[in-house]
Image (cartoon, rainbow over all chains, first blue to last red; front, side):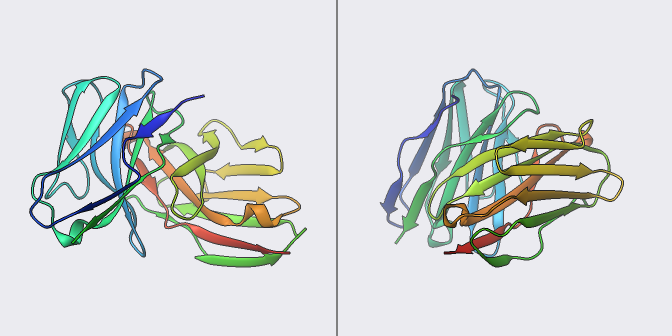
Amino acid sequence: DVKVTQSSRYLVKRTGEKVFLECVQDMDHENMFWYRQDPGLGLRLIYFSYDVKMKEKGDIPEGYSVSREKKERFSLILESASTNQTSMYLCASTLGRAELFFGEGSRLTVL
Amino acid sequence: KQEVTQIPAALSVPEGENLVLNCSFTDSAIYNLQWFRQDPGKGLTSLLLIQSSQREQTSGRLNASLDKSSGRSTLYIAASQPGDSATYLCAATFYNQGGKLIFGQGTELSVKP
């Protein structure tokens, strides 16, 4: 089975802190995605990557950056966390346009 | 703009009932459509993936259909059980969007014992 692992299920950070969310997949998928999910707003795409060292902005990239140094790992970075970035963050991966697999999610609270 | 819509936002049914969840999309140039299940506080679990060349896919008590001409997909759940209670989301990939999925808002299903 495909496994997408998000390193932290729950995080609590303070405003202005730098936050790293890590995601690792074990199936050699070329495509990886970061979404955030908020009540009433659904899933919104932050960034995605089609290959190592490649990244594309999604619908809401402001305040975020990403890193993909290795094929299996896709990191989401909040350079200076703000309270409006309190959310559930979901990582996903897929091979081409095939089935999309999600991690368990990381619930971030920014105080 | 390509959009995916799920109506209703919430649905409550008694145990044992057969039910249909709806998903509509605005662009017939759909590559594939995927149905997911999400339990509270968890990630999304893939249920079924239908390619544009297919009409339906089945997995156990679940059957998903795709009608490109009408811009609709349905997820049929047979003999519903309380354990089916979750939010169900559909997501479409379109030909001119690369690998990006466009998600519906989801339908929250509650199956009462």
